[in-house]
Image 1: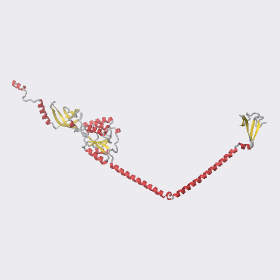
Image 2 (image 1 turned 120 degrees about the vertical axis):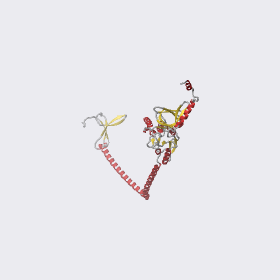
Image 3 (image 1 turned 90 degrees about the vertical axis):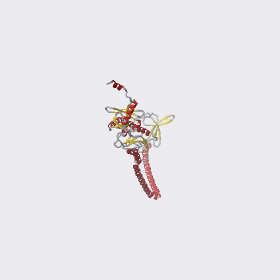
Image 4 (image 1 turned 180 degrees about the vertical axis):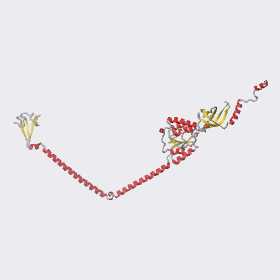
Length: 422
């Protein structure tokens, strides 16, 4: 190589670009070519900043791509991004000149298939079930006649129209308070959980909370499988009816709610009585009441007619005569009974008198017997003691013998133990 050529190679080009100029040209060419890009990969290194932005990395087997989801875009995402989730993202590539780096600014995000979501769903279901959040024992009954209902749903969706139309076609005596909330996308679960808390604070208190949403894919309904919402449903102090999706759609919120409705329309049915059926029942009961009253009136009328034909009203004096005759019969019977009682008493009295006279001492005396008493002097007066034995009777003692016609006074000369002393 000649010396002249060597000197030319060592000289800088006359129009060298500054770093800022070079980066600006790269930004201009790259961003214009990747303004509408779809990128598939696995989410990793996800960071939720305090500002509301989400920073993450998309990766495959051989490369990494930094990405960001701005706070204003986060609410429109179909699902909440999480580490390990396989997704396909739409966005634009942006170059950051101060650092000379680039990143994908994501405005749409979808899960690739349902395998990853279903795996997360099964894992969360098992954990919450073990805690008892789905236990039937913690379910509360839904009021039969609710006066106030808090309806949590999107104010612009079809579900609110289906619910209200069904509710008011069945029962118009219920006040409905709509608590608006997003029902899909990133952050919707947190918003729904906040709506439950707000519904529980309504004064006067509501009787039941209905949370409804129309059908959709697993990705569309994913907010109702988020742990924060499931725990809010389980902790609600007011019974909750969950009517999410179609009949075949079962979310974790359905399992944690006090009652699962198949659809938003079915949720309206579950929280309201059937006005037509109640009206029919009231009419039937009214007819039964009317028929019962008519029967009682007819029975009372027949009784009154019977009483009017009775002798009590046709000939009141006959009743007096009947009662007088009955009274005379009772008086005659009482007299007969009294006379019979008196006669029996007289007979018993005569028999008792005969027995008494037969056993009287006077009768014994009249037959030749006597009663002898020993006269004892005590305190200047004489005391007659019945004499039954010779023992204790001294010679010279004074005796009194009672005969049928008088008394004999005698003095003891001697005593003997023989029946007839000599």
